[in-house]
Image 1 (cartoon, helix red, strand yellow):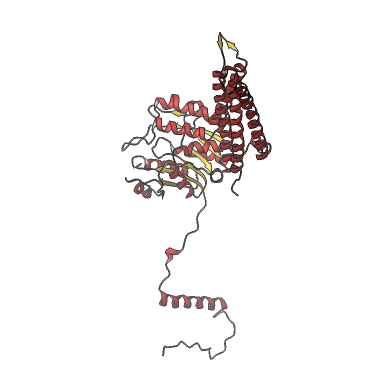
Image 2: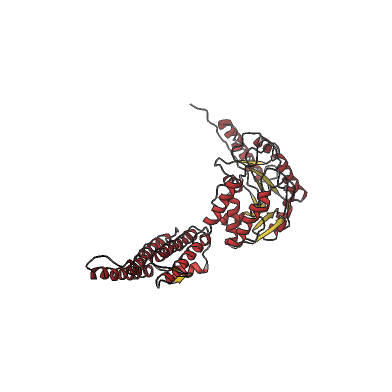
Length: 438
């Protein structure tokens, strides 16, 4: 039989005194229990106890892919800037699969390394930002082209209540580009052109759309719900911030020559330029679809106005052939306008862009039923015109026709039927797109 431990009451009676107060008895009992548990189960594993996450003011996020030449310099500058200006913060290195000593360098300098398996500039930044503990986030490339000693300027603007603080390297926004820091094609053509486009297409109040040194509040970042996994991540942030009317400020910065020696810059001029243009157009149904669609439709209507009465312009008679080309312009133009509505509706339903007052009005007016009635009316009118041409053909016992005359009935008729069918099916598709997820 196993030994038993008998607990016996004391034989002498004690009066409550300071010799053994109640608190001491409880502590003694707790210690006895701990010793007993330790003898049976061993000491508890303190590694299982998770520390409470500390809330910081700033997280500096650096995307990294084989940056051993310059990563240490960038980390030390960021740490020095925070230390000298009493900013409670951290440095996060979002590593995207480095095979050199980048991770080792970051760890030795006290930076927090976040391994991001999904490849791409945007993926790396999203992984690093998600791991950030700071109220504010400043992102910047780890190639030593950005001076992280300028961090306090961004923090000051964020403390003033701005949602996004964009750096500006170009003189138009007060920045400085040191000799050899930016290729001439980028400085004098690519960057100014794309900056002009983003200012005019999206009303973004920035002078350097490509500057990768920027700061933002974590709350604003979470609200943006960015999707781009590649280099478009930076431009998507500016575009969506502008579309959602965020409070954007701009800080002049200095661009230094790239300090890397082991490999060339990751940027590819024409490939990345095309990706930027493509992204602008995808995010702007107005310029991608609506503007060219309206222009084509107007040209088609003008062609009809001149070709139906066989008008002569500079001695040239605009006849049935002109009418046919005008119909093509009208069909393509109308389809582009419909695509603009599809794209805008989809973007709103996916919360990529906010709903504008014009789109809200259109949604209330352009119902499925009204679209079907309009489409049926167009198709019926076109069928009637074709019927007139058929009657003319029947009148000559289905013999030869005067095409210059009959085509003025057939071409508008066929065009109206096509536009009517487009309108009906487009109305159905638009209704499907409006079925937003809850």
